[in-house]
Image: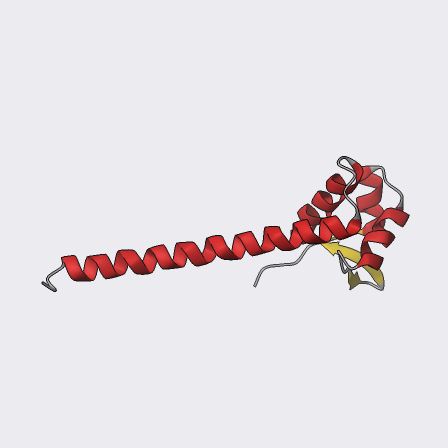
Length: 104
């Protein structure tokens, strides 16, 4: 079983030179749900990239919270569709191999 690593919201904010209030807004809007570790809100290591994406979209591109929510949804949906496409391509290859192997 993999060990989960966390970073505190304070550490994240210090690293990115941002105010914790910005993270509070992100949490309030529901774009991110912190995990609790030692009674302190934390960010799981695997979610840091998403939180950084949210920050970039908002601070560098000026996208509002609703726009970011839409972008994140579309990104997740695209990943699902890509996974589904890969599965269908694998099934197609298996069918092709079945028919080519002697089912004639």
